[in-house]
Length: 385
Image (tube, rainbow, N blue to C red; front, top):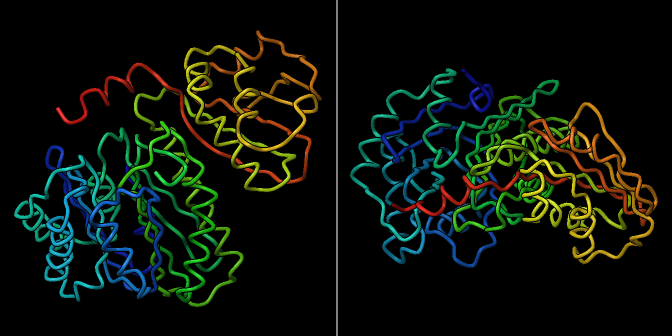
């Protein structure tokens, strides 16, 4: 299957290579840039480096490797991250301090810089806007992912495209995810940073696979300006749509997952309150395992909502279950009305949707996750060996 998302954006070229567990992606695009980063106190070297470099608000390219996280590697790791940007800069003929860097893989191991240099120089020779080049870049950053993740939102006069990787170690403070997003809209640094922060809050920060926040989570967005100035609210909506699509793909590809879970909460006293309830439900191991077993144990959903730290009247809530084509009521204004046969039938498909009305306000939010299976334990029980 071929894709085009970031390479559909004017001014973007890409390519990548994957050799066993070790991959390298190179993306070239010049413009205003913004980034968001993991909230984990144990931050990988590329995160520390980019938290400093992104203060300039501009990027010319991004280099990303998979197979080694370059995390918990001290001063050597930081220097190695700088070396990666130098390698990319020399390969592309640009200043290293305008190169973004990201890594993903095993924590506590040092980069194989000779391998990275060889891969980078080979990849740099064949940057293009082709679907095959983009596919190579998306595959290069994958670790335990089972499929590459692309998203493209086309608006009148401009586009927003992104690729990401993420499958496990995913929690609501971003997360293990790398995302590289591009737009041809013309935006200043402040506009782009504000839009990316909001889009992240409503997408990547509402995904829960296993509750672990990675050391390496990063999302970088570059605006090439090729399409000229655009309507800012329309751009924000397009960016949010692109990020939401990528976030849902991450959730659907959770390690060992068989089903995507979507939780929408409305009737909340505030948007963040709604998001907190949705994240708590989506992150509950009891809800996840019930979905895996196709057990319509809706009580687990209500119980999880009750420990989210949001005040509501449990005797006023309503709850539905669905699969995207049909929905069935389970609780109505605090009264149990569940038809368990229909509820179980709604859990047979690849997507299970819970809708929860707290009846305590007017705000809404959606979060995404996946079921929890034996395969998750198998993958992570042998991750480094």
